[in-house]
Amino acid sequence: MLKKLLTLLLVVSCSSAIFAQKDYSEKWNAAYNLFRTKKYAEAMDAFVKLAENTSNPGYIFNCYIHAGYSARALKKYDESVAFAEKAEKVANPYLYQAMIRKMDFMYSTGKYKEVTEKFPAETIMKWPECYRSDALYYLGLSQYNLKQGENAEKTFTLMFEIAKMENVRPSYQAEAYLCLASTLISQKKNDEAIANYDNLLALKKVSGYWKSRGLYGKGNLLKTMGKKEEAVKCYEDAIATKGCPDWVKNGCEAMAHSLCKRIEESKTK
Image: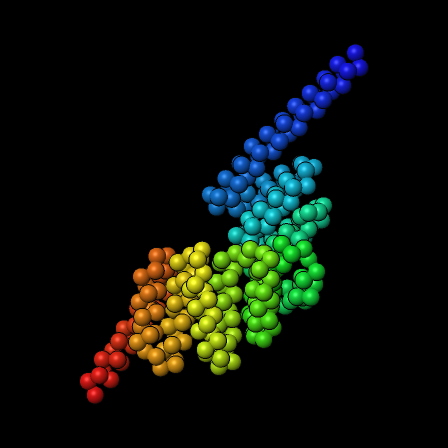
C-alpha cells in the first residue's frame, strides 16, 4: 500500500513539473516573439512578469537578462542595468554571466568609467576562466572610449593571451583588433597597427561586416603612409566584400576615386 502511495506521489510530482515547464515554455515563447517582432515594451513587461512567477533560477536569470535587452532597445539604459543586477542575485552558476551582461548594458549606456572602476582587470582575472575574455572585451572597449589607449592595449592583449584557454567570439576579436590598431596609430606605431588589421583579416569565422571595416581601416592607414596603390587595393577589396555596410562602401569608393586620380596625375607629370 505504501509502495503504491509513493509511486502515485512520484507520478503526480513529475506531472506537475512537466506541466510547469510546458507552461513556462509557452509564456517564454510568447514573450520572446514580442521581443523578436520589436515590441520591446510589451516584451519587457512579459519577461518581468514571467521572472516573478517562476522559482527556477535559470528561468529567472534568462527572463531578467532579456528584460534588460528589451529595456536597452527602448533606450532605457538605467533599467537595463537594473535588470542585470536582478539577474546577479540569482544563485550560481549565473553570477558571472549576469555581471558580463551588466558590463554590456553599462557600456551601451556610455558608463565607461563605471565599467573600469567596478570591473578592473585584476578582478576579472580571478573569475572562472570561461568568463574572462568576454569581460575583458567590455573593459577594453570602455578604456578605449575613455581614450586610455595604453590600458586598452594591455587589456586586449591580455584577452588574446588567455584565448588559448577560451573561445573568444570572432566579432569580439575583430573589434579588439580595430581598437588596438587605432590606439597604435595614435602612438604612431603604424607597422604594429597594420599587423593588427592583418590579424583581423586572417580571422576565419568573422563576418564580412568586420572584414570590410578592417580593410577600410588598413586602407586609410596605408594612404597616410603614402602607399597609394596598396590603399586602393584595400578599398576595392572592402567594397567587394559581402556584408560590407553602406557607410564603409561609400567611404571606400570616395577614397579610392580620390587616390586613383592622384596616381594618374603623378604618372602624367
